[in-house]
Amino acid sequence: MKKRHLNISILGFALVLIILLSLYLGSVKIPLSDVLKSIFGIPIDNSTWQYIVLEYRLPKSLTAILIGSGLSLSGLLMQTLFRNPLAGPYVLGLSSGASLGVAILVMGSGLFGGILGSAFFSKWSIIIAASLGSLMVMLAVLTTAKKVKDTMTLLIIGLMVASLTSAVVSVLAYFSNAEQLQMYIFWSFGSLGNLNWMEVGLLGICWLIGIILSIFSIKNLNALLLGENYAKSMGVSLSRNRLIIIISTSILAGSATAFAGPIAFVGLAVPHLVRQLVKTNDHLILLPSVLIAGAIVMLICDVIAQLPGSDLTLPINAVTSIFGAPIVIWLLVRKQKIMF
Image (cartoon, rainbow, N blue to C red; front, side, top):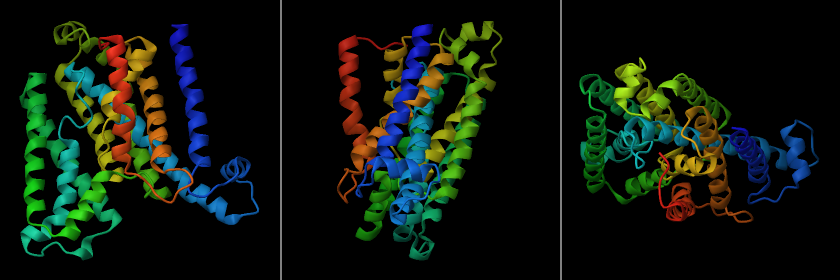
């Protein structure tokens, strides 16, 4: 137990270092001392540097922390609920629902004869459209969850919803022009650097609600690891617990997609990486470890994506997969089994 607590402490220390690294590196070279002064509100000689740190790099780092930890926790919840190592935060079709909402906004004019025009396009309209898309899918899943008792059936329904929404997006893309397609594709790349402080605050509220719901589910999550029959014998209400887990995942993954676009790999892979590190399936240990590790992985991917010293920025969605997938494959091949 002491070793596991030590691992969490090491993760926490690594998170602090990565945060400082993400604030220090960028297209503009700023001395670390000036970065630290800016964070603590101490005036520096170059006001432009202070503005870059406080209004761009710090919100971006906080966004990476919220997105990475939220998606990672969502993946942990889904893997435990379905007892499936391939389950991720988007397995219920939440990302596909958000993508459909954005696709209707961006590419809908191609199919609906101009009802949706460029006047509607803005950052907030994209966020609202993605949120509404995720919300509609969440409501559909919750309605289904009340009627379906078999968890695996719910998983299959989620996959079918994702396929259905993807098909609708494909139809919209077929009737769209090059400009609309480009706008949608850029959104699908994902981005962590487009949020101001108010938007980060809204994302943080959604994150906090999802975390609180997850914390109340820790005991039930541990019981589910031994099977639904065991959980029933322990007094766990499967239907109520399933609804709480789905709502928590929907809030965390849905808000992440709405504010940053669809981001792959993190939610699926980080729980497996953490299990290899802490050597336990106890969610009392897993939950904080996954939150910290998810934030670390997303920050590392963000540092790689922004190509320090260059004005170019790679798509974060591509970097998360390119950076993370080989690591997970290597770990699984080395261990030859998945802890679950």
